[in-house]
Length: 115
Length: 356
Image (cartoon, rainbow over all chains, first blue to last red; front, top):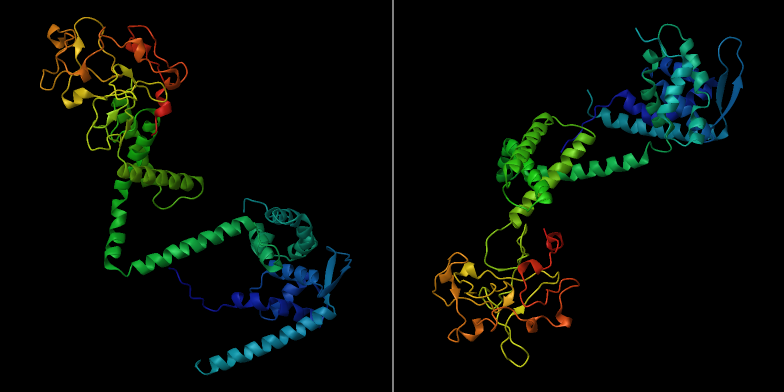
């Protein structure tokens, strides 16, 4: 039987926290899809996928956590901006608390053994 | 690059096609501003869309995963799940059994047997096909059958050598099916080999008789049957009782196989093979004389045992004809003339009784 040992890599971890990461970016300011990708990469999540961010934005919007509006642009395409509504803000608060608690647990666990 | 880079519109279209299995409403909800988004990405100088984002198919897959919701192609997913679980169970069993040395040795040795299986597989499939055409046998019957069999064996080995690394799709399915059929044929052949030995009562369908169908367990009292002595309800012996099966075919026995000969009267027709009791020569008399040899015939004489005495006129008489109620199937009634000939026996299609 084949067994798999996974080395932790950031793309695996990112799958679980991309929602809260996108919410965090939008909490600072309203943004459009590609701008969110850029913000995440500038924040250090370099291997975040464009399609992942786009799909996450559409899913959060469908779930009612975001509002959106189109901004016409003189040069280039129209941009659909997304921003947090109340649902999105409460989702960010609870997700953030969950992450903080989880990260603290992991840090405590690894501090005992990691050099 | 020889291929021109995809425009945002073409890229978006390819993504839509890759997601064509989703309900249109869901898909449009997901892809609503994909074109604008891709135009934004393409406006970034330096790289083509494909260099930056990968193939449209990969993009679609990532999008599908991030958007969540309906899984792609649920039926295939289900099939994959079942297959994964099945292979998982088999793998676990295999791993457990590998702890047993005999199994380990057999598993290590099994690949060496593969070519032998290829040969057996081709042979078995050839025999199966041949048995659909003619009698079922363990060896091909004639030169043509042998050539056919060898061709299939060759094809089986060829397929085996070619597909060892593993093939996908229809080829694999066909191969698995052929293997399964071959396994069944081989096991069935081992369990019930086609036999061609005499011994039981033979139901003779006259000539030609491509099939030997035998009814076993007729001789439940322990002996083999080569003659039948009928009596009527009052216990009086009957003569010239003609027996037919349900399809109107004469039921015959094979006394020659037991060293007994049918007594042929010197005057008149030879007795019918299915008129019982058969007029057998007394035990110990010469067997194997050619028909027509004067010494092979017997004169009707009162010294012969009553059971084997032919009817006085030397031929099955009309009074021995089965009564209407016992008449074999329609059209199968033997001619009522005083000299019925074997050609009057109804010809029934052998396929009906072909139980193989």
